[in-house]
Image (cartoon, rainbow over all chains, first blue to last red; front, side, top):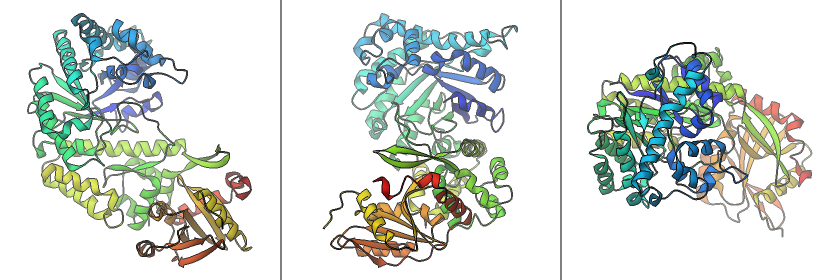
Length: 444
Length: 145
């Protein structure tokens, strides 16, 4: 079975890229529930106008948002964010009453009737909100559409984030919510259960077994998986191996689907059969960011141009990428550039027979701002630069998914990692460490 | 003796020192590919980029990586009493020079001479174009402090 290429929906600005490089590049899109609650009509229009017919979608109900400190779901006026407010309204009394007042606790869902109400509301939300918006869209309301074709790829049970301090309290609740969801499953529907974890939980094999055992008898069709802030390029070999072990056990030797909501190239490798039972049936990334993400929102800082170096399978700041390529002599001329760096259509267009044009991946608009009464010049990537970096990234990701789906031996994949390692290790040793860790995690 | 409380103080002292030379143009806090270069000195066609650190030279070494795309010479200025052999070795291997600030007489000692750097022409052209655009830097010179 081919690895599914999912992309998460971040902003409407990026909605044009779900048919990029082509309309078949992605298996589907993952929406955040709060965005769905906020702009269902816009997302319905996106599905109709910006994706192919039958494009899959999943709504992550993001129910964990209500368990964190309330500051994360409030705006600068200390009011509940409107999108979260809409979501809370959809989820019934318990959530609606407490949202923004205090974090939800396991005790708030101890009564069966509360859990049943929560699950029913959460599932109704997922089943109805996009399908209704699609029905009401001007483009489709005059056509007799088969309603089932507009349903989510799977419905997702409500869930809460697990870390080493709350595991014993929230894990039983998550299990019960998952079971209630399965009991409410309609004919033809798939049920996915989210497992959203602090990576610390996977540090201990007993804890891995404990979590796997809890979900062992569930008759769900699949899982959504998210290790908070798990950057595959910086975590250790053992963390990577623990993730693979955990996911393989959850999937029961690939009998269940498992979509990594935030994964990079290591997740792709771990999804190939050449390394044993695939850890994931699908891997998701965002159009720009999203190969790893914290469960609670973190400030973004000043945006900076990043160029995806396929040898390193990661995005590197433009200034570092340019320095690396110059050191290697890959900016001498366009032939050197295309044969060594990239020959994707976006790079062919940007370079345009002159390797000097690589500077276009680093162009900035400069703005002077006052900081502590001192003028400081901030450099923001130009709109054109952002789009070029994004297109190049999406081409490379598309190549990577195809590569993984056609991989015939682990030696081939390891050899590719080694080439990247050997090419950059002498002058950029900190940029290649993850390649060595990935190799060790996969084959020792 | 003037005590330097911050890198900003240090950069000001450096600028005062180099401002005595009338044959050079000096800029401070010059943006370069999303980074800020503490000081840029232009003498003729040559651009010398200086990264100033009170003591954390290892951080300066990292920050200088991007300077190699645009600079003729790269210096790391420190305000420490001693300059370690490790620092000298590291800087020498990369072609960077070392400047040491002597607070007792407010002078700068050249501990290690920088080697001429081979920059990347297209990026250098962008750097020169931006640095010569007063809109970007006229307010970011010494008089604002």
